Amino acid sequence: MKVLVINCGSSSLKYQLIDSESEQVLAKGLCERIGIDGSLTYQKAGGEKEVSELAMPTHKEAIQFVIDALTNDKTGAVASLSEIDAVGHRIVHGGEKFASSAIVTDEMIKEVEECSSLAPLHNPANLIGIRACQELMPGVPMVGVFDTAFHQSMPPKAFMYGLPRRMYTDYGIRKYGFHGTSHSFVSKETAKFLGLDLENSKIVVAHLGNGASICAVKDGKSIDTSMGMTPLSGLVMGTRSGSIDPSILEFIAERENISLEQVLNILNKESGVYGLSDGLSSDFRDLGSAAEEGNKAAEEALDVFCYRVAKHIGKYITVMNGVDAIAFTAGIGENDKDTRKKIMEYFGYLGIEIDDEKNSIRGENVKISTDDSKVAVCVIPTNEELMICRETVALVK
Ligand code: AMP
Image 1 (cartoon, helix red, strand yellow):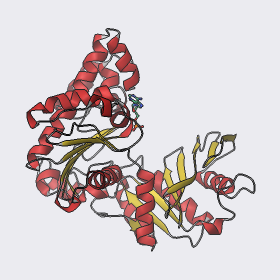
Image 2 (cartoon, protein in one colour):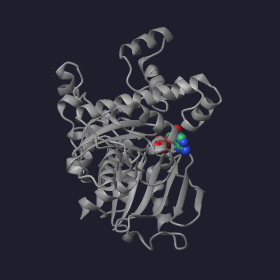
Image 3 (cartoon, protein in one colour):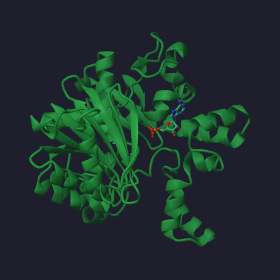
Image 4 (cartoon, helix red, strand yellow):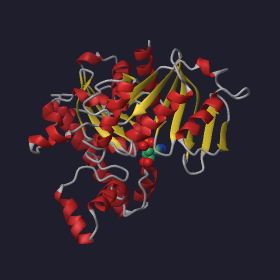
């Protein structure tokens, strides 16, 4: 099957056309500045990247341009639209309604709309993409793959906050977790790569990108994760604060004479390693070089990040009563050997040792712990688009 994978944001849309048999990407790209001026990036496998400025008042025009590019006589990846067998859509929030991916139907769309209050910036954008595809590709089966679904296996002791029960029953306030598609993909790949029986395994996945979260995967299921009702909690991230004492919100609002919304903006966009480094950068490459040159704030930002990650990994090892493997993924997890090493230095007590040579390999699945190490540590590049393609094929077939 040829599956078009769509990840739709409020003013952007990323896409990949994947052959599900070979799992090869046939073409990929993105539309940006939808509703502003519009640009389309398109790249066929093995071909040059093409960028065109195109008027895209809405997502519908954007998707039409994607279809035109995919079916273009000269550079298209397919001869006609009829070759696209299914569309897989990333959807951010499935609330408690979706514990797995789902075929797109009117009923399903209604349920996704009901989850929108939990992700007011993301779900409506995801739905716009679904509706535009429905209009332009009538009859093509579509599947929604949720960031939250993988974490629906968490038990109440992991997802309940210590708040009055009615906050949960009346408003759905609980931990949902995010990056589920990545945690699911990486835990499965880790088990396959290391020859573990997934159904009988304990894996900690560290998805460390600009947004970052850790997941405890026991017997193939998420039993706890560091993000919460929103992606703001847990680890210190690129620009997000991660978990902080909740009383700080009122304290900042009073001291700075700003609204709660403005405080949340600081917590989401001006905090994390960016805030800790005094606005130097949220990018670990910049922070690493600044720290090497003696910038104390950058060094401290990296220390805080690694310490918080290590604490979460430690917590999850405890709740799983052990660990078979720790897997690093996403931008920092896949590329930053120094950060991986620094995090793993906290786990000497578990007999974990990092092999510096293997830790320098990039772009592939690799075990970075020594053969003597009691717990396997690996780097497993994530591939959320491929996971969405696999889920789509499983449901459509
Ligand atoms: P992601 O959100 O998964 O795309 O990750 C993006 C982040 O990964 C960037 O902000 C950087 O902090 C980090 N990153 C990407 N490449 C590297 C690299 N070569 N070395 C260190 N960090 C990197």
